[in-house]
Length: 328
Ligand SMILES: Nc1ncnc2c1ncn2[C@@H]1O[C@H](COP(=O)(O)OP(=O)(O)O)[C@@H](O)[C@H]1O
Ligand SMILES: [Mg+2]
Image (cartoon, rainbow, N blue to C red; front, top):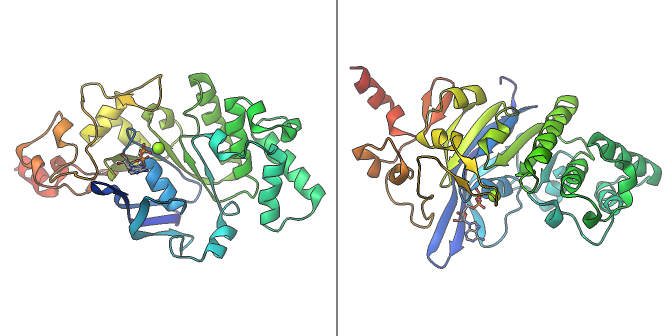
């Protein structure tokens, strides 16, 4: 995509303080999101996807702390800006949709009251205008506005997630950040919500930063894919090439993964084991202990993100010198 990026994440690093020292759940993450683009972020549970999203939206709290990097949104650093400015941009220019609307929505007020609070917080005071806008966004996500009078527990799981998306659309933001918004739903409801998100994106033109453990879920919807493993980006590139020619062995493993019916854990076919302890990731490639294509030097040489056709991959097999040697 050639348009200027609206989000520029540079060397974003997040540590959790644990009893065994710092666990680096986001390690020098660098990527862009372009206007109107759908960027899918995939990786097993525990790879740092939510940490990354929360850091980008400046929603992290103790014991997590941002220890480095910047997040430029339309050129302004979200990480250092005043709270006041952040509150102006949040909802209006970027919005966040969480994994569980049940946790994100207030259980003791109606949907209407929650939407109105957001509108009023941004200075929209006219009651009739606000009511009209609330009804509009409910219709946008395919919910009868009569449900503005409902409490979250009165809605089905799918409707609650769509109500969260409706709330994110109140101000037609440029960027919507979504953390596994469909993971609590059954497969049919998941697909229909994904189709709806994509259709809204087409109509309204916002960019999406979408996190999921299920690579197949985003395959039809993402312009680009970013694969995370153990707090690092291990592959990023356009979705087609990531699917047709995954460059990192971990991406190939994810492509063969079965999302567990019991929750967000995925089983990687042919790649047993689990991600490393982030408090002690060790030297070398973090995927080496599980990698079906491991080489001797993977154990102590840490790979960088190497450019390859249409993508970047953090695998020594793509190290320019290695590629040269193979050719020779
Ligand atoms: N509250 C916490 N305390 C300590 N470490 C945490 C906490 N939450 C997350 N982590 C660390 O961050 C890693 C990434 O977590 P998370 O961002 O939730 O991953 P994902 O969203 O990909 O499942 C975990 O594997 C763990 O090491
Ligand atoms: Mg998560």
